[in-house]
Image 1 (cartoon, rainbow over the protein chains, first blue to last red):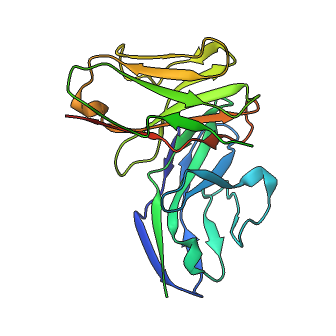
Image 2 (cartoon, chains in turn blue, red):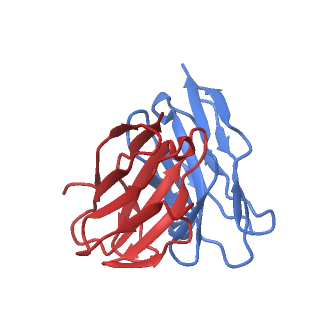
Image 3 (tube, one colour):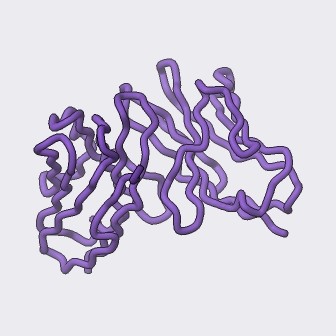
Length: 108
Length: 113
């Protein structure tokens, strides 16, 4: 069955330190993965999708089919990166399967 | 332009009451989705519309849940005879088409007492 796992409920790092938010997936087909972010009191918004292979706000994510992972990385965390981050997988062309989310706290 | 809007933002219902949650998608967006997000969890898919057609309702948890989008724009999610386990945030999203980026509304937080 298709599943997305984010093993960390909470991740706390100091400003300027590297950040890695983990995401693992289970899917029998060719996966298409996303990272969504929810800042405090704001709505969910797309951060990046793997097919775009772009960097948004300094974040990147590489799809590793061998390890079935799509970890989100940023070399130098900023305080404004504090938010909830969700990894999601698209299934059957439109249905998003979501991880439980990781709360990222950037300490000053 | 305006984003996806949802109303009400908060709803408190007594167990057994019926509730109706509204979603106004981005103008011109063909696809519309409803998700349920329980506390501490990621969203879970409920149902999908393409224009006025409900193409997938496999995620609706019971026959107490009903969704419609009669004119292919505004959508309403109705929950009949609410139960405490229905307490969650209900999210609506719209997109230009299948596999396009989904844009989310602010959600409706439903609390059933």
